[in-house]
Length: 479
Image (cartoon, rainbow, N blue to C red; front, side, top):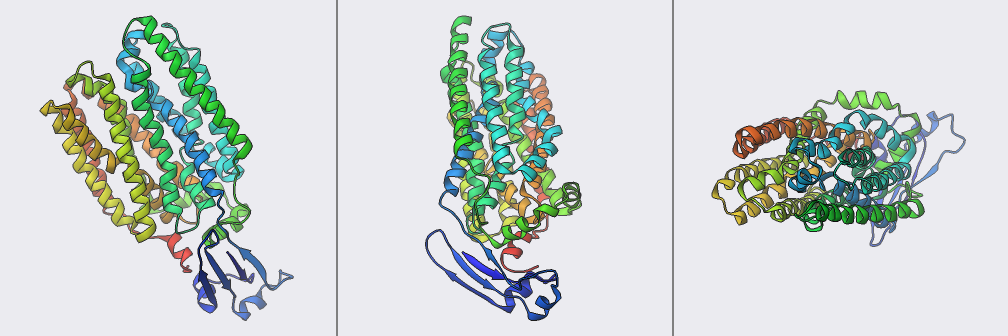
C-alpha cells in the first residue's frame, strides 16, 4: 500500500483526504493504495522542506502472524504461572504447611508488583519498542520458572514465592502488549481481531494453568506431591527457555512500513512524544477514566474469582480438585471464544460503546447465575454457569483494550492499556483479599454476591462513557 503526501503546515486530515483521495481495494497483503495530495497553498507555507512531495507508504506483511504467534506463546507461559499454585491450594497447604491466605499470595503478587512497575514498563515499550519489551518479559518468565524448580522441598515455599515474584515482574512487559502489537503490525480492518488474539494468549495460559496442575500434581504423600511439583516446574521452565530463544532469534519490533495511515501519524510524531504529558492527557480524558474504573472492576472480579476458585469448589464438592481445574478451564475457554467474537464484531461494526455495554451487562447476568447455582449442589450446573460468566467476563478484555485505544488516540496504546491493567490489579488485590475473608467467614454466597454487586456497579458506570472513536476518525480521514 503506498501513498503520496506533501509536507505542510497544519492541515486537517479531512482536508487532506477530501482534496484528493483515490483508493483501490485488492486481495493479498497490500490492501489499499492511497494517493493523497495537499492544497497548493499548504505547500507554499512549508518553507522548511526542500522537497514539495514525499512518499508515505503503508503495508501489512504476512510475517505479522508469526510475530503475533510468538507473543501469544510468551503470554501463555507467563499467565500459566499466575494461577498454577492457586488451583491446587489444598495440595500446597499440605506440602508446604502454609494456610490458604498464604497460598493466595502466589496470585496476589502478580497484582501487587504490577502497580508500581506499570509506568517503567510502559516507558520501556514506548521508548525501546516491542522487541526489547518482549525480550525482558520472556527472559524474566523463564528465570522465574527456573527459580521455582529449586522450591521443591517442604521448607522452601519462600523460594517458590521468589520465583513467582520474578514471573510477576515479567508480566509487566507482557500484559499490555496486545493493543500495541496489533496497531504496529496489523491494518485497520484487522487491528481489533489481532488484539483479541493477543489477549487470547493470556487466556490460554490461564486455561492451562487451571487444567494441568491438578493433573500433574496429585494428592498423596509428601513425596508424591513433591514429585508432581518438580515435574510441572521442569516442564514449564523448559518451554519458557525455548520460547525465549525464539524471541531472541525471530521477533521483530516493527515492520519496515507501518500498516495504516493512522499508524503513520503516530510513528512520525514518536520522537517528539513527551511521556509524562501523554499520561496527563490520558488521565484528563473523562471517558477513558470511566473506562479505567469499569475495566478494573470487571477484570478484578475475574482475578478474585479465579484465585478463590479451588477453595469455593471444594466447599461444595470435597475432593474435586480436578473438577475445580476443569471449571476454571471452562471459564477461560468460553472467554477465549468471547474474546475472538468481540474482536470480530468490533472490526465489522466499530460499535465500541454498544459492544462494551452488552458484554458487561451479560457478565453481570452470568455472575448472578454462578453465585446461586452452588446451592443446587450439582457440579454440572456449575460448569454451565461458570462457562456463561467466562464467555462475557473474560471476553470483555480485548473489547476494553480496543475501546481505550479509540478513546485515547493518538496516545501510545501501551500507555492506555498499561493503565487499564494497573486498575485491574488494584481492584484484583482488593477483591481477592475481601473475597478471601468473606469466603472463610461467611461462605461463598456472600463472597460471590459481593463480587456480583461490584460488577453491577461497573455496568452502570459504563453507560456514561461517550463513544468518541478518535482512531476511527483518523483512519477515515477526519480530524
